[in-house]
Length: 628
Image (tube, rainbow, N blue to C red):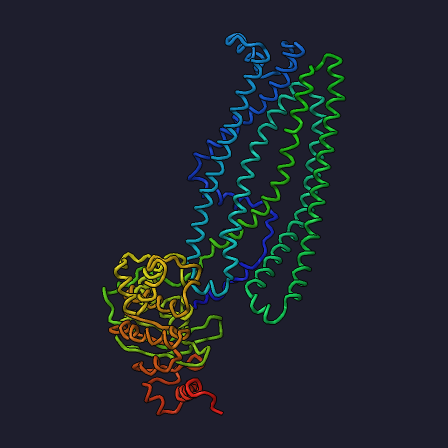
């Protein structure tokens, strides 16, 4: 591994970010994904302005037209009516309608425009945000796919999934909330302008209540922020405990831990209930305060506005207009307080997302990679290779070995001796500290990782099945592997027979991790996948360790065909697989301890002979029963 990658602080991905500071640079970076949809966002802004204006006009129709003009008969008041009285009179004259019908028609038209405009505003806003965050999620996924194995060795997968799912969703809530907030503040300023034009004194009195709403909102949001954090943590603990118990239900029942686990779950549930009650109490108190303040504002309007009406300084419709506009003054302030919490959470999510996007750790790729021939001979050479996953703790220490083209090399050794590490370096999943690896005499560091991995077929003990059909799992999207090629590969490794017995044959849908296949069937599918790709070099990492004897007999013939004409590196514990190798490499403490044929190493009486004798005794006991 390169020192640059080794010195990185991967613990940053475990850090909890508060997002307590409004980061304008971060907001600016988010707009990068919104720019392609600026046309939709612009249309949404126009629609919200139109809808807000029409909403205010509807209130004017109720107060100034219906009350003042029709009921009271004050058409010539100095109070602003935004032309609604004149428009009503025009409808009366043009359509021959009574004043009440004309006002009703006008209100219906305004209501229809407001409804359609509001719906189109929300749809265009949400569509543009969803498209932008879809692009962000794809960019994040694409970036994570190109990180090296060393990154995933140190960063929990759950942390990465949180960034792709929950953190992107938090940005959605923030952007949607900000768009909705614009739709509430436009009526705020329009209503404020009309109110000032109607009664400056009454407007100023009501405006004194706005800072009170703002201060109390901020106070309650600070209290609820901590409570909501405790609620989320307790819910997370509940889910984690439930998942552990359900996933390990057989162990729970075998060990008779039902009552103990229920007690643990009950304690976590009680803690969650306590936090939930606290959040409900805070929300209820905040709601009661807002209702009380609204009642106070309504009382002020009736008291002061009533006096203005008596003194003929304000019309009755003007007083009603103030009562209708009062919510337009308070609601945006309350919404702003709510959106601040969403904004701060989104800041933390944005930091985590861009932390992942800015993480540039990667393996070395040559600027001008060497060109591989159409078909490799398959010679592999490890020359004095030293490597460790952690600085100062080498797993491989000066390993040198040459695998000739078409040769079968078996690698054996105790756990932790570096067997699997050696083939991971061959697949260019890690940069190594010292030494060189050659592929047909070409330096591996001069080759692009994509080109190398196309030439190496790897079958791991933990074979991964993707969701999709059997055919999809054999071809893996390789354009050179069609249906006929996939079936031919499966037939060679004796997987065709069990595949055809599946409900839909090669079109059978496989569930997550191939749970509807046996372990042996999954391994047979792994061989078919590798054979279909037709690599020049074959690596089997404990590939038959989990296969029963009967299934292994089926694949031995397929293995021989698979390895024919290919360089094969075998990491295995089965005696038959090892004994059939041309040479055997014995690793011990990351160094080459022994190298030779099966017979040569047995005759030497070293580590391999000891491992062979131990396994031979195990097989003898399995076949002959108890040896006591």
